[in-house]
Every structure is written in C-alpha cells, then in structure tokens.
Image (cartoon, rainbow, N blue to C red; front, top):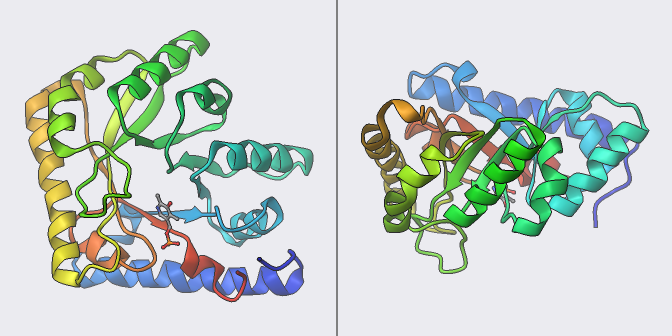
Length: 242
Ligand SMILES: *Cc1c(COP(=O)(O)O)cnc(C)c1O
C-alpha cells in the first residue's frame, strides 16, 4: 500500500525526483554524454493518480504506465482536477482491444510486441487521423516471463512494421535479465543497441530509430553507458512512499 498524497509525500517525492535526476545526470557525465540526451520516464504503476500528480508537480513531465486501465483512470483524474497533463507513455503489454480508447491519450507506445498489434495501432491511428510514435519491445533477456518480440521475429517483421501508415517507429525498448550480474546486463544493453543499428541499416530512410528505452531503477547507469535515450524509473522515485 502507498501513502495518501499530502504535503509530506509531496516533499518526499520532490526529494526523490531531484535525487534521481541528479543520478541520471551523473551517469551521463561519467560516460561523456549530455543529460539532455536522456529522458526520464517516471513509472507510476505503483501509486494512485494523486501521488502521480505530485511527481508531475515535482518536475517529471513524462509518466509511464504499464496498464491501459490505470492510464485511463489517471488521465480522467488529471482532467477532473484541471491539472497540466504530463506526457503519457505506455510501457506494458498492450492488448489490441485497448488500443481504441488509449490511443488518443498516449504520446509514445513503448511496448509494441507484435506485428498484429502494430497493425491494429496503425489502423486506429489512420481512423482518427493522427500519427503515433512507437517503440518495439524486444526481448533480449533470459527471463522467460518477459514480454517483447524475439530478435529473429523482429528482424523478420521489421520491414512490414516500418511500412505501416501513421506509425512513427522511432526505436526499441528492452529490459535486462532480472538480477543478472552487471557484465550480463551490459552485454544485453549493447546487444539492443547493435540490433537497432542493424535495423536502421536494413530499413534505411523509412525510419529513424533514434530512441533506445532501456534502464530502470537498478540498471539505468549501465543502460546510459550503452546508449539509452529513455530511462524508465519507478521504485527509486517512490522511495519511502510505497
Ligand atoms: C515497472 C517497470 C519499470 C520500472 O521499474 P523500477 O525497477 O521500479 O524502476 C520500467 N519498465 C517497465 C516496463 C516496467 O514495467
């Protein structure tokens, strides 16, 4: 259970946000990258809308949710309370029957894990007359529980995904193997980057795969060293809250 939003949680969340932002900036400087090249997605699946709003208020402008229902509820809550909307990223498995209701609310779908889902999103995007940025979730980890497309399947389907109308395919998302040692994690992140480079060559002008969404609370520094442009941070931001 998380705490109720109140002035003390606001202070704690602000401290957490400043600490995480500093750690991400330090991780960038350590490998000679600019902090402006790495966006922080505040993963808010652990908390309710009021606490999510306190994170936005603290300065986190991109919120990641892994379940569409939570996204809908929180989006409604922000509207009702007339609060400035953050940008919303979907980072969890997206069922095709949730696409229609979710699409108008989303700024980036990070978790496209099949050609069929990409087709569904494309069809809906055409219907509402909007182009939606997506990342493909690729499974490079050894965890059987992880979602995401296998590397072989992605290479096989890449051209078809790249050709779908009203999709702006702009990169890859990945997770490292849970509790793996740091050498394994570094290798996994590098393999995602290499896969991206390979796909970019294969697909040429049709896509610009600039974004690599990798790195969570426990491994963002290694992800940044491997070229991550988006880190998805949850638990560190909710320290002493959940
Ligand atoms: C929960 C989650 C995160 C955040 O993980 P933490 O370890 O809490 O920072 C990142 N990405 C995805 C896809 C998640 O589901």
